[in-house]
Image (cartoon, one colour):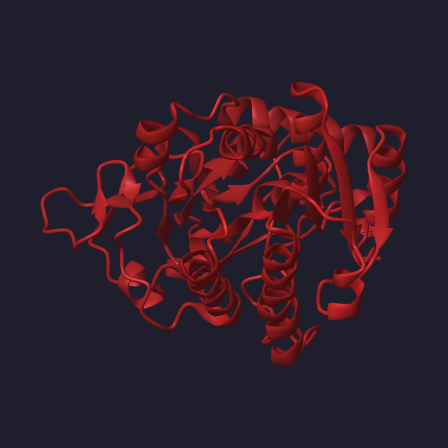
Amino acid sequence: MKILISGVCGFAGSHIARFLLESREGLTIVGVDSLARAGSETNRLELRRLGVSVIHGDVRVASDIEVLPAADWVIDAAAQPSVLAGRDGKTSARQVLEHNLLGTINLLEYCRGCNAGLILLSTSRVYSIPALAQLPLRVKSSAFQPDGAKPWPSGIGQGGVTEQFSTDAPISLYGATKLASERLAQEYMEGFQIPLWINRCGVLAGSGQFGTAEQGIFSFWIHAHRARRPLRYLGFGGKGFQVRDALHPRDLAAIVDFEIHSGKEGNLFNVSGGAANSMSLAKLTAWCDRRFGPHPSTMDGSERPYDVPWLILDSAKAITATGWKPQIGLEQILEEIAQHTEAHPDWLERCEA
């Protein structure tokens, strides 16, 4: 079987490539990457040692994709992944559209040309920001949680946000490009019989992630805490009660492996660490204080575009349909990142390069 991974030198793409090679025999993996992001070159060298053919190319450029060797499956792990992309002063709106939507279009055309299936890595940020902001929440143990004494909107339960939750705008330019990519991929599936799986991922977290405050928050926070960099609780009263869940990329890779080899029709899943792997920023700070020694975080109520107070994905649909479930717990993820910070004290500087 031949597999093409776009964004193969990124955090998700490189982990998926390694997992597949470790788990299966007879695989040939070709990766395409623009090598534009920090850390790409390091991952490229490691992947080449594992036998991955890494091709320098840009998913935004159709001619770069058209010349790639034919594959049986494409894993689309290439993206501009920051929720603030297009509004952060570092990227333009057009760049976000080209990376996350035009890139998907080019890969869909590639799949159509060689009869390949597609696994699209989407995001939890396709869910409506106003709907999430209006959730009835209470504070317990320094963290927001849904208030069970009040009515909940459709699409949310004890396990978190389901695939039926609202995707109404606004969802950020980033979220909008990923939701549009999902819709286009589904049209190609129906119109051209392209096998398709869509995975709406929670926050990916683990060692080696080039995290920033806009993405990879678990990695960024732990690295910044140990480096004694200024940390701020933004918005929602400035107390750090906002909650997200963490998913290790090897757990993501495990469901991708199932999807490639299952022989079943595709589906759309939430894929996340879930409630068991969730934590507020305040609790993450407390964890870092125990691990590295106390370091204060500034209470700052300043609002930031697209932030949400609570977002945990319910992966019950994926678990029921595939038997998959996350194997790497939150404590293990956090400790893995902590050990990485100790081995690479200059990591934040490399992230900013």
